[in-house]
Length: 367
Image 1 (cartoon, rainbow, N blue to C red):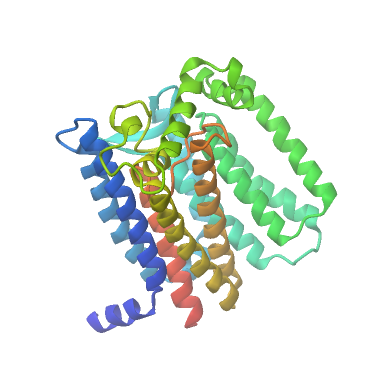
Image 2 (tube, rainbow, N blue to C red):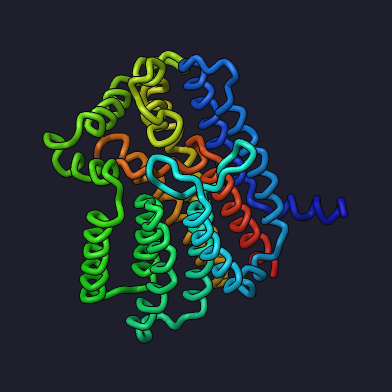
Protein backbone atom coordinates (compact mmCIF):
# COMPACT_ATOMS: atom_id res chain seq x y z
CA UNK A 1 0.00 0.00 0.00
CA UNK A 2 2.78 2.45 0.96
CA UNK A 3 4.64 1.54 -2.23
CA UNK A 4 1.53 2.37 -4.30
CA UNK A 5 1.09 5.64 -2.40
CA UNK A 6 4.73 6.60 -3.00
CA UNK A 7 4.47 5.82 -6.72
CA UNK A 8 1.32 7.91 -7.01
CA UNK A 9 2.89 10.88 -5.24
CA UNK A 10 5.79 10.75 -7.70
CA UNK A 11 3.40 10.98 -10.65
CA UNK A 12 1.29 13.97 -9.63
CA UNK A 13 2.21 17.44 -10.88
CA UNK A 14 3.89 19.13 -7.93
CA UNK A 15 4.13 22.47 -9.73
CA UNK A 16 0.33 22.65 -9.90
CA UNK A 17 0.09 21.51 -6.29
CA UNK A 18 2.72 24.03 -5.16
CA UNK A 19 0.99 26.98 -6.84
CA UNK A 20 -2.31 25.95 -5.23
CA UNK A 21 -0.69 25.81 -1.78
CA UNK A 22 0.93 29.22 -2.29
CA UNK A 23 -2.42 30.76 -3.28
CA UNK A 24 -4.14 29.24 -0.25
CA UNK A 25 -1.35 30.46 2.02
CA UNK A 26 -1.63 33.91 0.48
CA UNK A 27 -5.34 33.96 1.25
CA UNK A 28 -4.88 32.71 4.81
CA UNK A 29 -2.36 35.46 5.55
CA UNK A 30 -4.76 38.16 4.34
CA UNK A 31 -7.76 36.63 6.14
CA UNK A 32 -5.69 36.53 9.36
CA UNK A 33 -4.75 40.18 8.87
CA UNK A 34 -8.37 41.25 8.38
CA UNK A 35 -9.50 39.22 11.39
CA UNK A 36 -6.93 40.92 13.65
CA UNK A 37 -7.87 44.37 12.42
CA UNK A 38 -11.58 43.76 12.99
CA UNK A 39 -10.95 42.91 16.65
CA UNK A 40 -12.00 39.31 16.15
CA UNK A 41 -10.19 37.84 19.14
CA UNK A 42 -11.28 34.25 18.47
CA UNK A 43 -10.15 34.42 14.81
CA UNK A 44 -13.14 32.23 13.98
CA UNK A 45 -13.15 32.93 10.23
CA UNK A 46 -9.42 32.31 9.97
CA UNK A 47 -9.71 29.05 11.92
CA UNK A 48 -12.63 27.93 9.76
CA UNK A 49 -10.64 28.66 6.62
CA UNK A 50 -7.75 26.57 7.98
CA UNK A 51 -10.17 23.69 8.54
CA UNK A 52 -11.56 24.11 5.01
CA UNK A 53 -8.03 24.13 3.62
CA UNK A 54 -7.21 20.90 5.48
CA UNK A 55 -10.38 19.19 4.26
CA UNK A 56 -9.70 20.48 0.75
CA UNK A 57 -6.15 19.07 0.74
CA UNK A 58 -7.44 15.68 1.87
CA UNK A 59 -10.07 15.67 -0.88
CA UNK A 60 -7.52 16.82 -3.46
CA UNK A 61 -5.31 13.80 -2.77
CA UNK A 62 -8.34 11.48 -2.53
CA UNK A 63 -9.69 12.53 -5.93
CA UNK A 64 -6.22 12.38 -7.48
CA UNK A 65 -6.04 8.68 -6.53
CA UNK A 66 -9.30 7.72 -8.27
CA UNK A 67 -9.07 7.02 -11.97
CA UNK A 68 -10.78 9.95 -13.69
CA UNK A 69 -12.29 7.53 -16.26
CA UNK A 70 -14.83 6.62 -13.56
CA UNK A 71 -16.18 10.16 -13.83
CA UNK A 72 -16.91 9.46 -17.50
CA UNK A 73 -18.97 6.35 -16.80
CA UNK A 74 -20.74 7.86 -13.76
CA UNK A 75 -21.32 11.24 -15.43
CA UNK A 76 -25.08 10.91 -15.77
CA UNK A 77 -25.57 10.00 -12.10
CA UNK A 78 -23.28 12.84 -11.00
CA UNK A 79 -25.31 15.32 -13.05
CA UNK A 80 -28.66 14.05 -11.70
CA UNK A 81 -27.31 14.20 -8.14
CA UNK A 82 -26.20 17.79 -8.68
CA UNK A 83 -29.63 18.86 -9.95
CA UNK A 84 -31.34 17.16 -7.01
CA UNK A 85 -29.03 19.08 -4.68
CA UNK A 86 -30.04 22.39 -6.32
CA UNK A 87 -33.73 21.53 -5.94
CA UNK A 88 -33.25 20.55 -2.29
CA UNK A 89 -31.49 23.82 -1.44
CA UNK A 90 -34.44 25.75 -2.90
CA UNK A 91 -36.75 23.84 -0.54
CA UNK A 92 -34.69 23.35 2.61
CA UNK A 93 -31.82 25.83 2.25
CA UNK A 94 -31.11 28.78 4.53
CA UNK A 95 -31.89 32.26 3.23
CA UNK A 96 -29.09 34.80 3.61
CA UNK A 97 -29.72 38.38 2.39
CA UNK A 98 -32.62 37.21 0.25
CA UNK A 99 -30.75 34.33 -1.39
CA UNK A 100 -31.63 30.71 -0.60
CA UNK A 101 -28.36 29.08 -1.58
CA UNK A 102 -26.86 27.38 1.51
CA UNK A 103 -27.33 24.31 3.67
CA UNK A 104 -26.50 25.08 7.31
CA UNK A 105 -25.25 22.47 9.79
CA UNK A 106 -23.08 22.51 12.94
CA UNK A 107 -22.08 26.14 12.42
CA UNK A 108 -20.87 25.51 8.86
CA UNK A 109 -22.56 26.25 5.55
CA UNK A 110 -22.46 24.46 2.21
CA UNK A 111 -23.23 26.24 -1.07
CA UNK A 112 -24.20 23.62 -3.70
CA UNK A 113 -23.76 25.99 -6.65
CA UNK A 114 -19.97 25.94 -6.12
CA UNK A 115 -19.94 22.17 -6.67
CA UNK A 116 -22.43 22.36 -9.56
CA UNK A 117 -19.76 24.23 -11.53
CA UNK A 118 -17.67 21.04 -11.41
CA UNK A 119 -20.68 18.86 -12.25
CA UNK A 120 -21.38 21.03 -15.32
CA UNK A 121 -17.70 20.97 -16.30
CA UNK A 122 -17.63 17.16 -16.21
CA UNK A 123 -20.86 16.87 -18.22
CA UNK A 124 -19.54 19.19 -20.94
CA UNK A 125 -16.13 17.49 -20.93
CA UNK A 126 -17.78 14.13 -21.54
CA UNK A 127 -19.95 15.48 -24.34
CA UNK A 128 -17.24 17.38 -26.21
CA UNK A 129 -14.65 14.63 -25.78
CA UNK A 130 -16.88 12.30 -27.82
CA UNK A 131 -18.44 14.86 -30.21
CA UNK A 132 -17.37 15.28 -33.81
CA UNK A 133 -15.68 18.60 -34.42
CA UNK A 134 -17.68 21.05 -36.61
CA UNK A 135 -20.29 18.42 -37.52
CA UNK A 136 -23.84 19.65 -36.85
CA UNK A 137 -22.71 22.50 -34.62
CA UNK A 138 -26.30 23.56 -33.88
CA UNK A 139 -26.87 20.15 -32.34
CA UNK A 140 -23.85 20.72 -30.08
CA UNK A 141 -25.22 24.11 -29.03
CA UNK A 142 -28.73 22.83 -28.28
CA UNK A 143 -27.60 19.71 -26.43
CA UNK A 144 -24.99 21.44 -24.29
CA UNK A 145 -27.40 24.35 -23.83
CA UNK A 146 -29.78 21.94 -22.12
CA UNK A 147 -26.92 20.62 -19.95
CA UNK A 148 -26.08 24.10 -18.64
CA UNK A 149 -29.60 25.56 -18.91
CA UNK A 150 -31.12 23.47 -16.11
CA UNK A 151 -28.54 24.37 -13.41
CA UNK A 152 -28.53 28.01 -14.54
CA UNK A 153 -32.33 28.26 -14.16
CA UNK A 154 -32.29 26.53 -10.75
CA UNK A 155 -29.48 28.79 -9.54
CA UNK A 156 -31.29 31.92 -10.77
CA UNK A 157 -34.30 30.90 -8.69
CA UNK A 158 -32.14 31.13 -5.52
CA UNK A 159 -31.29 33.80 -6.89
CA UNK A 160 -27.50 33.66 -7.34
CA UNK A 161 -26.73 35.66 -10.46
CA UNK A 162 -22.95 35.38 -10.03
CA UNK A 163 -22.80 31.57 -10.10
CA UNK A 164 -25.30 31.41 -12.97
CA UNK A 165 -23.18 33.86 -14.95
CA UNK A 166 -20.01 31.84 -14.30
CA UNK A 167 -21.61 28.66 -15.68
CA UNK A 168 -22.94 30.52 -18.74
CA UNK A 169 -19.60 32.19 -19.54
CA UNK A 170 -17.85 28.86 -19.01
CA UNK A 171 -20.21 27.17 -21.50
CA UNK A 172 -19.73 29.98 -24.03
CA UNK A 173 -15.94 29.70 -23.75
CA UNK A 174 -16.00 25.92 -24.25
CA UNK A 175 -18.21 26.39 -27.33
CA UNK A 176 -15.79 29.02 -28.60
CA UNK A 177 -12.91 26.56 -28.35
CA UNK A 178 -14.96 23.86 -30.04
CA UNK A 179 -15.86 26.22 -32.87
CA UNK A 180 -18.74 28.71 -33.42
CA UNK A 181 -19.67 30.84 -36.41
CA UNK A 182 -20.92 34.43 -36.29
CA UNK A 183 -24.61 33.52 -36.64
CA UNK A 184 -24.43 31.09 -33.73
CA UNK A 185 -22.68 33.65 -31.53
CA UNK A 186 -25.45 36.20 -32.29
CA UNK A 187 -28.19 33.67 -31.46
CA UNK A 188 -26.58 32.66 -28.15
CA UNK A 189 -25.89 36.28 -27.19
CA UNK A 190 -29.51 37.22 -27.92
CA UNK A 191 -30.82 34.38 -25.77
CA UNK A 192 -28.41 35.34 -22.98
CA UNK A 193 -29.57 38.98 -23.14
CA UNK A 194 -33.23 37.93 -22.97
CA UNK A 195 -32.49 35.63 -20.02
CA UNK A 196 -30.64 38.43 -18.24
CA UNK A 197 -33.48 40.93 -18.74
CA UNK A 198 -36.08 38.45 -17.46
CA UNK A 199 -33.88 37.58 -14.46
CA UNK A 200 -33.22 41.27 -13.74
CA UNK A 201 -36.91 42.16 -13.46
CA UNK A 202 -38.42 38.95 -12.07
CA UNK A 203 -35.78 36.96 -10.15
CA UNK A 204 -33.05 39.23 -8.77
CA UNK A 205 -33.48 40.91 -5.40
CA UNK A 206 -33.46 44.69 -5.03
CA UNK A 207 -29.84 44.88 -3.84
CA UNK A 208 -28.73 42.66 -6.75
CA UNK A 209 -30.44 44.96 -9.26
CA UNK A 210 -28.80 47.95 -7.56
CA UNK A 211 -25.36 46.43 -8.16
CA UNK A 212 -26.00 46.35 -11.90
CA UNK A 213 -27.57 49.81 -12.13
CA UNK A 214 -24.77 51.29 -10.02
CA UNK A 215 -22.19 49.83 -12.38
CA UNK A 216 -24.01 51.09 -15.49
CA UNK A 217 -24.63 54.55 -14.02
CA UNK A 218 -22.81 55.26 -10.74
CA UNK A 219 -24.50 58.66 -10.38
CA UNK A 220 -27.95 57.08 -9.94
CA UNK A 221 -26.83 54.06 -7.90
CA UNK A 222 -27.64 53.73 -4.23
CA UNK A 223 -25.20 55.22 -1.74
CA UNK A 224 -24.47 51.77 -0.30
CA UNK A 225 -23.56 50.10 -3.60
CA UNK A 226 -21.55 53.08 -4.89
CA UNK A 227 -19.75 53.26 -1.54
CA UNK A 228 -18.68 49.59 -1.66
CA UNK A 229 -17.10 49.88 -5.10
CA UNK A 230 -15.52 53.25 -4.30
CA UNK A 231 -13.88 51.91 -1.14
CA UNK A 232 -12.49 48.92 -3.04
CA UNK A 233 -10.96 51.19 -5.70
CA UNK A 234 -9.49 53.48 -3.01
CA UNK A 235 -7.99 50.47 -1.23
CA UNK A 236 -6.36 49.11 -4.39
CA UNK A 237 -5.02 52.53 -5.36
CA UNK A 238 -3.63 53.42 -1.95
CA UNK A 239 -1.27 50.46 -1.66
CA UNK A 240 1.48 51.91 -3.81
CA UNK A 241 4.45 49.75 -4.67
CA UNK A 242 4.93 47.86 -1.40
CA UNK A 243 1.60 48.38 0.40
CA UNK A 244 0.86 49.52 3.92
CA UNK A 245 1.76 46.15 5.43
CA UNK A 246 -0.40 43.27 6.62
CA UNK A 247 -2.74 44.54 9.31
CA UNK A 248 -2.14 48.22 8.51
CA UNK A 249 -4.59 48.90 5.67
CA UNK A 250 -6.87 51.80 6.62
CA UNK A 251 -9.77 50.79 4.36
CA UNK A 252 -9.81 47.14 5.42
CA UNK A 253 -8.75 47.45 9.06
CA UNK A 254 -11.11 50.35 9.87
CA UNK A 255 -14.02 48.47 8.21
CA UNK A 256 -14.52 50.96 5.38
CA UNK A 257 -14.18 48.07 2.95
CA UNK A 258 -17.17 45.66 3.04
CA UNK A 259 -16.85 41.86 2.61
CA UNK A 260 -13.08 42.30 2.88
CA UNK A 261 -12.41 38.57 3.38
CA UNK A 262 -14.56 37.40 0.46
CA UNK A 263 -15.69 39.57 -2.48
CA UNK A 264 -13.11 42.34 -1.91
CA UNK A 265 -10.09 40.38 -0.73
CA UNK A 266 -8.16 41.52 -3.81
CA UNK A 267 -8.62 45.14 -2.68
CA UNK A 268 -7.15 44.19 0.72
CA UNK A 269 -4.14 42.61 -1.01
CA UNK A 270 -3.69 45.74 -3.14
CA UNK A 271 -3.81 48.02 -0.09
CA UNK A 272 -1.74 46.01 2.38
CA UNK A 273 0.78 44.36 0.03
CA UNK A 274 0.77 46.88 -2.81
CA UNK A 275 1.74 46.35 -6.43
CA UNK A 276 4.38 43.83 -5.35
CA UNK A 277 1.79 41.69 -3.53
CA UNK A 278 -0.65 41.85 -6.45
CA UNK A 279 2.13 40.87 -8.87
CA UNK A 280 3.07 37.94 -6.64
CA UNK A 281 -0.57 36.80 -6.46
CA UNK A 282 -1.01 37.01 -10.23
CA UNK A 283 2.33 35.25 -10.65
CA UNK A 284 1.07 32.25 -8.65
CA UNK A 285 -2.06 32.13 -10.81
CA UNK A 286 0.09 32.41 -13.96
CA UNK A 287 2.22 29.42 -12.92
CA UNK A 288 -0.95 27.40 -12.30
CA UNK A 289 -2.49 28.34 -15.68
CA UNK A 290 0.68 27.80 -17.71
CA UNK A 291 1.20 24.39 -16.14
CA UNK A 292 -2.40 23.39 -16.91
CA UNK A 293 -1.94 24.60 -20.50
CA UNK A 294 1.21 22.47 -20.70
CA UNK A 295 -0.85 19.34 -20.01
CA UNK A 296 -3.57 20.32 -22.49
CA UNK A 297 -0.86 20.32 -25.15
CA UNK A 298 0.81 17.09 -24.03
CA UNK A 299 -2.03 14.68 -23.22
CA UNK A 300 -3.74 12.47 -25.81
CA UNK A 301 -6.95 11.66 -23.89
CA UNK A 302 -9.83 13.89 -25.05
CA UNK A 303 -11.78 13.61 -21.79
CA UNK A 304 -8.70 14.60 -19.77
CA UNK A 305 -7.98 17.50 -22.12
CA UNK A 306 -11.50 18.91 -21.79
CA UNK A 307 -11.43 18.51 -18.00
CA UNK A 308 -8.20 20.53 -17.81
CA UNK A 309 -9.45 23.07 -20.37
CA UNK A 310 -12.60 23.44 -18.29
CA UNK A 311 -10.56 23.95 -15.13
CA UNK A 312 -8.50 26.68 -16.83
CA UNK A 313 -11.60 28.50 -18.06
CA UNK A 314 -13.52 28.14 -14.79
CA UNK A 315 -10.66 29.39 -12.61
CA UNK A 316 -9.66 32.18 -14.98
CA UNK A 317 -13.22 33.51 -15.41
CA UNK A 318 -13.76 33.61 -11.64
CA UNK A 319 -10.38 35.27 -11.07
CA UNK A 320 -11.03 37.83 -13.83
CA UNK A 321 -14.53 38.72 -12.60
CA UNK A 322 -13.46 39.04 -8.96
CA UNK A 323 -10.51 41.31 -9.77
CA UNK A 324 -12.65 43.34 -12.20
CA UNK A 325 -15.26 43.85 -9.45
CA UNK A 326 -12.54 45.18 -7.16
CA UNK A 327 -11.34 47.81 -9.62
CA UNK A 328 -14.75 48.88 -10.95
CA UNK A 329 -14.60 47.19 -14.36
CA UNK A 330 -17.57 44.87 -13.65
CA UNK A 331 -20.57 45.05 -11.31
CA UNK A 332 -20.34 43.33 -7.92
CA UNK A 333 -21.86 39.86 -8.35
CA UNK A 334 -20.46 38.00 -5.34
CA UNK A 335 -17.77 35.91 -7.04
CA UNK A 336 -14.90 34.80 -4.72
CA UNK A 337 -11.25 34.86 -5.76
CA UNK A 338 -10.42 31.14 -6.26
CA UNK A 339 -8.29 29.58 -3.50
CA UNK A 340 -7.80 32.98 -1.85
CA UNK A 341 -11.17 34.33 -0.66
CA UNK A 342 -12.69 33.17 2.62
CA UNK A 343 -15.41 30.57 2.12
CA UNK A 344 -15.47 26.82 2.59
CA UNK A 345 -17.64 25.78 -0.36
CA UNK A 346 -15.57 27.68 -2.91
CA UNK A 347 -12.23 26.50 -1.51
CA UNK A 348 -13.22 22.84 -1.13
CA UNK A 349 -14.88 22.73 -4.57
CA UNK A 350 -11.76 24.21 -6.18
CA UNK A 351 -9.52 21.72 -4.37
CA UNK A 352 -11.72 18.85 -5.60
CA UNK A 353 -11.38 20.22 -9.13
CA UNK A 354 -7.58 20.33 -8.79
CA UNK A 355 -7.69 16.73 -7.50
CA UNK A 356 -9.65 15.66 -10.60
CA UNK A 357 -7.13 17.49 -12.79
CA UNK A 358 -4.25 15.69 -11.06
CA UNK A 359 -6.04 12.38 -11.61
CA UNK A 360 -6.45 13.19 -15.30
CA UNK A 361 -2.74 14.02 -15.58
CA UNK A 362 -1.60 10.87 -13.75
CA UNK A 363 -3.92 8.33 -15.37
CA UNK A 364 -4.07 9.80 -18.88
CA UNK A 365 -0.28 10.16 -19.01
CA UNK A 366 0.35 6.59 -17.85
CA UNK A 367 -2.56 4.80 -19.56
